[in-house]
Image 1 (cartoon, rainbow, N blue to C red):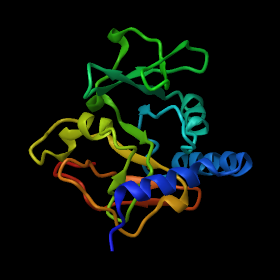
Image 2: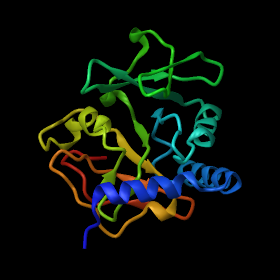
Image 3: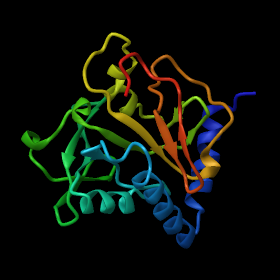
Image 4: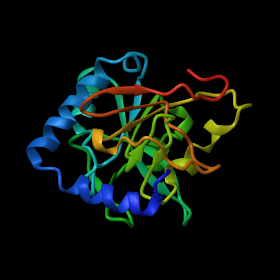
Length: 205
C-alpha cells in the first residue's frame, strides 16, 4: 500500500529533525565520500546543492570536496512571483548570503552570474523520501519539479543534469505515489548506499 504523502512527509520530517548532531555529521561525511568516490563525480564540473534546513542531510561536506577538486559550486535562488522557479547562483564559503522569503540563505550574487537548471552537471537535491524507481517526495512546494520539468520531455535534446537525492537511509521507501509533474531522480545517496535508478528520458546520461 502506497503511504499517504502528507502523513509520510510529517512523520519523516519529524524523524529527520530528531537525528542527533553526531549522527547527522557522520551521515553527511559518509554521503560526501560515497558521492565523491562514485561513478557520477568525475564528469561533473558544475555542481549545485542546497542550504540544509529542517533536519535535511547537510551537503556541506560534499561541497567542500567539490571546492577541493576545483569544481564550480552553486546554490538555488528563488526567481519570480509564486509559483517561483529556481536559478543557481555561485557559492563560496566566504561569499555573502541573503535570506529568501522562506528564510533560507541564498548567495548574494547578481543575476548575471546565475545559471539556469540545464547548465548544471549535477544537482544534489533535498528530499523527504525516495523510492526504488527514483520518485522523490519533497517539501511540497514543487520548485525542483517546475524548474527541471524539461527532463520529462522525451524530445528534449539539451544537457540533462544528474538529479542526485541526498538523504538518510530511513527516508528510503518501498513505493511512493508519483504525480505526472514529478521529475524522478537519477540516483540517491544515503549514509549506507548509493542507489542508481534505471528510469531516464531518452538522451539520458
